Amino acid sequence: MDAEELRARTRRLLAEHPPATTDRTDFLRARFDAGLAWVHYPVGLGGLDAPRALQAVVDTELAAADAPDNDPRRIGIGLGMAAPTLLAYGSEEVKRRFLRPLWVGEEVWCQLFSEPGAGSDLAALGTRAVRDGGGTESGGDWVVDGQKVWTSSAHVARWAILIARTDPDVPKHRGITYFVCDMTDPGVEVRPLRQITGEAEFNEVFLTGVRIPDAHRLGEPGDGWRVAQTTLMNERVSIGGARIPREGGMIGKAATTWRERPELRTHDLHRRLLDLWVDAEVARLTGERLRQQLVAGQPGPEGSAMKLGFARLNQAISGLEVELLGEEGLLYGEWEMRRPDLVDFTGRDAGYRYLRSKGNSIEGGTTEVLLNIVAERVLGLPSEPRNDKDVAWKDLAR
Image (tube, rainbow, N blue to C red; front, side):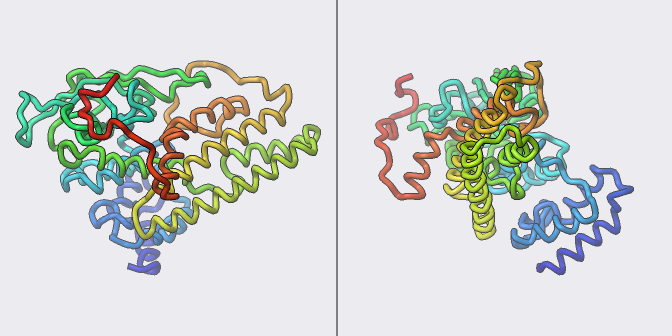
């Protein structure tokens, strides 16, 4: 498979399903079935077993024809986190059931990982999953009880990726199992978690006697931590390494204000804006290099460094924008309770961007955890002492 073949396939798709006259969902389904959704995925699962770098050939042709996309911001958790994990650990039946509606956007996904007592120390999670009847044989159902928190899009999600404790008698990293959870099942309760912005894009999720078929388990029982690493590495890349144009994202908002409001300018603010502009451009180019590295393999700890830089830059730039606006920067549009369908880091006004950016150093891995990952896995520094690595989860102090 080469670029010319992909270009020909894309043009054939456009000829058979003209974007101007084809229903949006029908076009996206046809694109998936043609293997042009993510070309590096297997044949029959939205791909053609082609090199990942060739996706740009397809995207360029479709953009030129004004073809619809699958609204990736709305389904980012499914695309960036669930899909790579389903592909790596799901059965053939699971992959064929979930990947097509996930990519088309017919089914939204959320992530049931963090808990009130297990955020930065995710492996300490206490949500329990027990086989129906207490047996250990394969098949049957798992019954899940517990609470999750900070769950983006849970109020609109059809499915969730879930990790739960299945063996409390072994150390915390070894007794976790990974599941796909139906958010419409009895026992799943979603409650809004209102943020400092006034919105509730996050949620608390309570699980009471939720039954999950064993066929919806990803990986072996007790091996959920290894499966979850696939999700987490992809999550940090999707948050911190998203492709944006020059002056895209937060720096574009501040630069636009600077250009359109010359009366606000000072020498000091100019110098600081230039420094942040350069930092943002360095981060953007570093992200491009990371995506080139992904062509040859799977995301590694470098994604954590990208997400770390993303949070620091967003907070610094949004703070500068508020300061640049002076008294106007103290204003806030409105505090109406909203339940947005997607996470928007740069929307609304400067006050919103300033407040929303505070969450960037928490979501997708806290800054402190990511610093540890970079220190240990990128720089090769000694690990921090951990006294609980060999202690059974049930014996940990809580």
